Length: 434
Image 1 (spheres, one colour):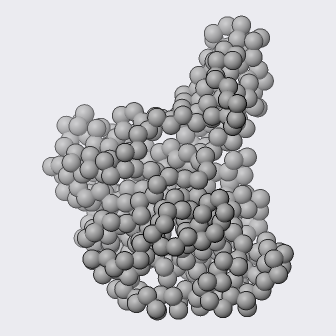
Image 2 (cartoon, one colour; image 1 turned 135 degrees about the vertical axis):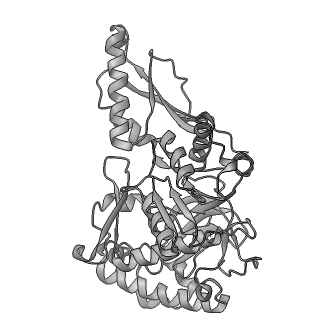
Image 3 (cartoon, rainbow, N blue to C red; image 1 turned 90 degrees about the horizontal axis):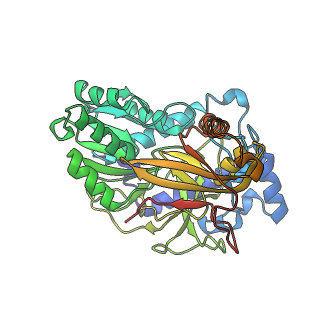
C-alpha cells in the first residue's frame, strides 16, 4: 500500500530533476545562514551557483558527526532559534550532545516519511500501533509515533521499559503493529511467555524494527516465534530519525530511501571517492528539504550499497541493502549510540583507575548487555572489597545518567587486560551477526 502514490512512484528522471533543484536550494540556504558551511565553501573556492548538476555534489565537502558536536548546541541551525519548534538530540563523546532543530515543516515532512515507511511495511489506518521505542530526546519513539498518527492509525505510546506491563498492553489493547528494537521484541516475547501470553495468538501481525544491527537469521527467529512480518526500518538522529528508509512487505529486499528528501551516495570510507551503484561502501546523505538543521554530504558511517533496479512493489525510490556494519567504533546498545570515548571520559574522572579498559558486548535473553572492565592501580587494589564495590556502583550510575545505558562494571587487578602492540582493543563484541 502506498501512502503518497505520486511521490513514491516518481519516474527516475523526475526524481533527479527534483533532487537537483532542492540541492541547489539547500546549498544556497546553508551558505547564507550557516557560517560553518559558508567557511567550508569559501575554503575550497566554490559557490552555491557552481552546483549545476547532481555530479557536482562531489565538489561539496563532507559533514562529520564531530562537526555537530563542535557547534553545540545551535551552531549549525539554518533558521532563527524562534523558528525551531522541537529539539532532538543524541549523546556526544565528551558530554556535548548532537543537537538537531526542527521547524514545523520539518516535523510535517518527517511524519509523512515515517507514514510512507509504515505503509510500505503494510500498516494501515485500521491498525493499533504499539510504540516501544524510547521517547524523549531520542528520535525513535516520537518518530514512529508521528508516522503512525499521520497514517491515521491508533497509537499506543508505550516507550521503553516496564516490559511485563507492555506484554499485557499488547494483549489488552489488541495491538497489530509493534515498533521497537528487534532485541526488545524478543525480550517482550519471552516476558509474554512467562506471563502466559503467546504472541502468536494475539492480533499482532507486523513488527517495524530498527535502531540496532540485526540479521536475517534473527528476522526469521522473530517471525517464527511471534507469528508476524518483521520489517527493517532505518533512520538516524542527525538526518531525521526513523523513516529515512524502509523495507516494503512485497519484496523485503532492501530499504526504499525517500529520494525526494534525501540525496544518497556511497563512498569509499578511506578515500572518500564515490562508488558506483551496487558497490558496498559508506552511506553519505544530503538532506534536501530539512530547514532547521540541513546537512550536506553527512557521513553516516553505515556500510551498505545502492540498488536502483525496479522493485515489485512499484516504488521507484532507490533501495539500500541491509547494513553490513560501520566504519567507526560506535556501538549500538538497545538502540543507544555509545562510543568508547564516552566510557573513557567517565573512567578517568575516578582517581585510582587505569586508562586500560575493555568493553564487552553480549546478547543475553535477547537483549544487548555491556560490561565495562577496567584496571585499578596497585594501591586501590589493596582496598577493602566494600570500597571497590562502591566504586563499581558509582561508575555504573554515572554511565546510566550520562548515556542512558545500564552496564555492569568489573574492576580488575593491574595488568590483567592484554596489551596490544598496535591500537588498543577496546571492544569485544560477542553478539553473533550471521
